[in-house]
Every structure is written in C-alpha cells, then in structure tokens.
Image 1 (cartoon, rainbow, N blue to C red):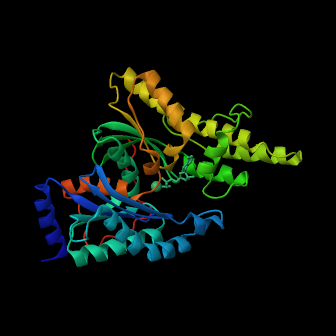
Image 2: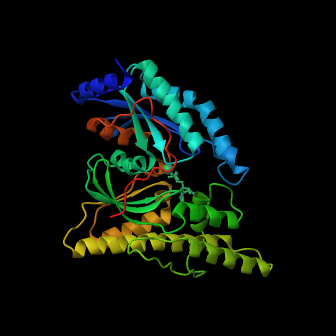
Image 3: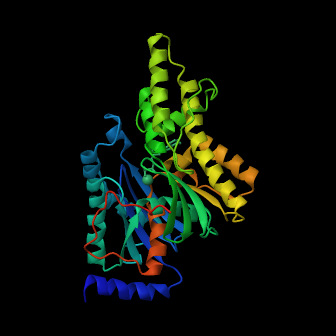
Length: 360
Ligand code: KG4
Ligand code: ZN
C-alpha cells in the first residue's frame, strides 16, 4: 500500500476516535518548536527552542544559521515534546509540520524531519500553513471559539485583517501595502540600538515612556481596511536622526512609546472601520480575534480591548506565550485539516511564499 493510501485509510479510522493526538513541528523562522495537541484544543506539551541568541549578534535572522540550528535541534525538541506529553511516537495519531510561508531552508528542515518520521512510524502527515497556525492559537486559549469570526493577523511578515469563515476557510479583507507590523517594530528598534528581536524590546521600553511625546504622521492607504507602516518608519528614522544631531541623549522610552502608539493606532483604526462597517450592515461579528507575534504587544491588547468593549464585540486574544511561533498552534490547525481529510503525502515540499487567502 502506498503511503498516501495508507494515510487516507488511517485518517478515516481516526474520524471515529474520541481522542486524537497530533505531534506538530514548527521551523519556519527562528524557533524550533514541537508540541502534542489533543483534539485541536488541549495542549499536552509545547516545547519552544529559541534561536534568538544565535541571531542577535547579526541583528536579525540569518537563514543559513537558522537551517543548521533547526537541523541540530529538531530531534531533541520532538523527543522532549513527546516526553512532556507522556507519549511515545507510536501512541500519537498523526504528525503535522509547517509547510510555509517562511525561510525555505528552515521550512525544509522541518518538512523533511516529519516526512521521515511519518514514513517510518506509519502516521498520517499534515502540512500546515504557518498563519493558519497563528489563527488557531485562539482555539487553544478559547476552547469554545468556533468560526465564523474576524481576525487581525500581525506577525513579522503579515498584517492582515481576515474573516475566518470556517475551519481552513479565510477571506482576506485588508493587508499592509508595504511593511508588516512586526517588521516595522523590528526596524524601529534597530534605529534605537535595541537588540534583535526588536518588537518585545520596544514594547517593554514603551511602558516607561510618554506616547504623546512625539507625533508621527497617520498612514494613508487606498483600501479601506489596508494598513501601511513604511511612512511611519521613515518619519521615525528622520525624527531619531534629528534628535541625534542635537547631540543630546535620546529619550528612548518616549520614542518607543510614541512609535508603538502610532503602529497600534493604525492597526486599531483599520479594525474599527471593519467592525463598524459590519455592525452598520447588520452583521455583528461573533468575535474579533488576534493572532501572530505582534498580538503579544501590550498596547495593542489594551487598544483592541477598549475598542471591542466600546463596540460590544467579544475580543479573543491568544495567551501571550501562544502569540509568537510555537508548535501547539500548528497541532491545532492540523486537527481541523485531518478532519477534512486534507493530508500530505511524501511529496510535501516547503512553500516559502504560501498565501493564506485571496483578497475579496
Ligand atoms: O508571529 P511571529 O512570532 O513570527 C512570524 O510569523 O513572523 O512574529 C514575530 C514578530 C517579530 O517582528 C517580533 O518583533 C514581533 O512579532 N513581536 C512583537 C512583540 N512580540 C513579538 N512586536 C511588538 N510587541 C511585542 N510584544
Ligand atoms: Zn509566526
């Protein structure tokens, strides 16, 4: 029997099973992460091995270093996830891995590792979209959350407003016309001389600063729900250079707070437009969710909370540890793919530029 025929048969058997445990691996960027997730909702283990120290020296992720580090860490991280879940490879029901988007070498390492394990242990394999994983982190934090809902996806490479119409069904409503929100935070941090990764550093520093100390321009975009961060980034760069030329010490906390306020303001403003439009059309969203590394940002969480409170829309935010890259979110997304019979075969490949959804 071919691997594919075997996987399909096994997936049908799993449809009858009450408890399905998936071992998932995430290696799309700079975290080697593995987890065991039960029924898409319960985290049995979640192990994240961060490569930050390896890349910090270079001020950003170095793709070759990332691939090599994933290769060295994969087996250990997978073993640790199984150990913490109290399971053996034989006992898990299926395997999942991020197939894209991300760094090609980093993705390939994970894809090949899981293809090898799936073949040797005779387990069905599921290839997961990284951003679908981020969205699914909400299912882990809110066991009762079900589509449809709206989601603000904000990571190092994405700033999307999407409608999650069903499991695995997304409609792209708005997106950044230039940089992603996380990228903007990382660049601003570099300008302030903060180490990589910049987003969390800016966030921490901003807590001590005055967000009204400096005013930055409001971005302009064509699409109603689109965002833009490159103008903000340039204005910030010019502001910092002007202050530096005065030869005085930089008020870094005030600068961080002002920049954070501007980025979060842009994201919240476009979310406000979407929510008010839906309410005006008589289609109040069941929930507004957040996903991706930037959804860990304290100011963004506060601003989105007050927006949703004001409009009476339930807000769903993954717990902080599940906002950034992890294996559990991949295990959650994989469960719903498995239920649809959306399985990978041994031709599964890394897809560095995979899209989540086409624009509507
Ligand atoms: O989702 P993620 O872990 O990886 C990608 O899929 O890109 O997001 C990483 C991004 C980085 O740009 C990082 O600086 C940003 O998320 N980030 C934050 C915070 N935590 C992570 N940005 C702002 N505030 C934070 N607290
Ligand atoms: Zn991510």
